Length: 257
Image 1 (tube, rainbow, N blue to C red):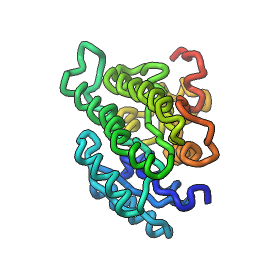
Image 2: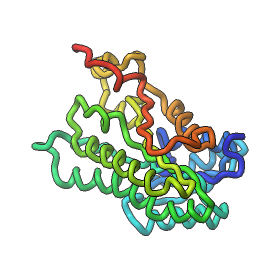
Image 3: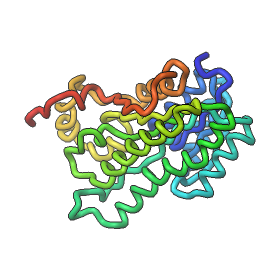
Image 4: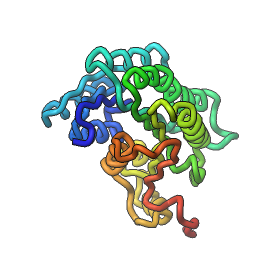
């Protein structure tokens, strides 16, 4: 198995990309530390992995809080003895996120706290654990909008994901000779609850799909496969990358609506 004897910590493991990735990495042989602020979702993830014969433990944590991030890393090492893979995936997209004029400071601050500070804190406490393990892989969830900009105004979210890209590149350079790889995963539009709550009519879905050359939304399970690649030794010469998994949306000209 591709991740046999590896320990992977996944934030936002209670739903969407995080949940599917937890299942995928467990199937590849990893022991999973499933982190989520939502206890119900996190426990369900652990239960589903257990039912499939895998090993997982749940840690409740708010990634915007330093004490919680320190706790989740400590839980990985105390439960499994080490940490090999850190997937900083937890993120939010606030319903009131808009353009510069209409986005409030509260929405901006909440978005930055989770999407940027959460990645920083995961790395702050996670990198020493990876160093103790002799190296490993960090995957930070960014987005295709950090490369293109969003067609629908969501300034705080887009800016936060751009920050994740910049942070990822610098961390990759700093730790490249410590056998620690750091990559930014940039999903395109996915059929997840996070996006579908905005695209809540068929008309809205069609308007988004016209921009995607493959003509469909991605699935969280497809992103999980990309994470598996970045977590495994198959990507041993990949670090500092903006790893786009987007159905071709960033390669295409804008199609008239």
